[in-house]
Image 1 (tube, rainbow, N blue to C red):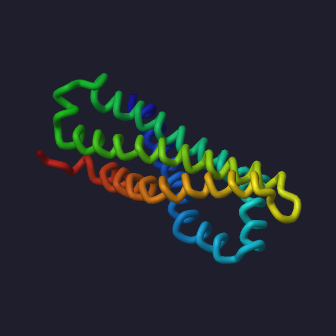
Image 2 (image 1 turned 45 degrees about the vertical axis):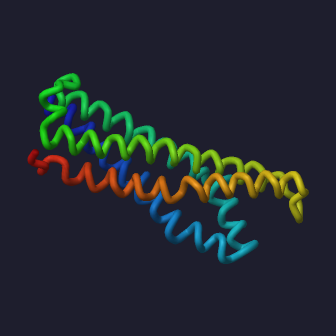
Amino acid sequence: MFFTMLVLRLVHIFAAIFWGGGALLMSLFIGRGIQATGEAGQQVARQLLNKQRLHIFMSVAAITTVLAGVALYWIDSDGFSPAWMRSGPGIGFGIGGIFGLISFVTGAIFGNGNASLARIGAQVNGKPTVEQLTQIQAAQKRMQTVAPIHLVTMILAMIFMASARYFLF
């Protein structure tokens, strides 16, 4: 059991670092740089999404993080034991898990928007058509709506996950 916990914990932590760190880096720096640099930025975005498939790697990291986290919570709680779930660590990990799941859902919406932009961008030759422009703007609006929720819930999940073992209630 110790080996299983160790492997799950390492998988959870490393996948979360990739997912969370990547999302923070993209939102706070790379995304803003792409927006600020016009056509050159769009070329970088196309490279990241169409050629390097960044959104797929982020999705795999997010799914891996969530699955390993649920397995860890199941094992730690001895099958979702109410007594453990009411303990300080149980509450802390539970709150962190809820924030993580919210971040997962909003990240999926954001990733879907990125995939839509990549698909539309691959179809654009020169200037986008009116229909393509409408689709681009709709995807960007969705992404702008969920991005702050995604970032805040991800940061809160990280804080709760990192400190839950020390909660005393």
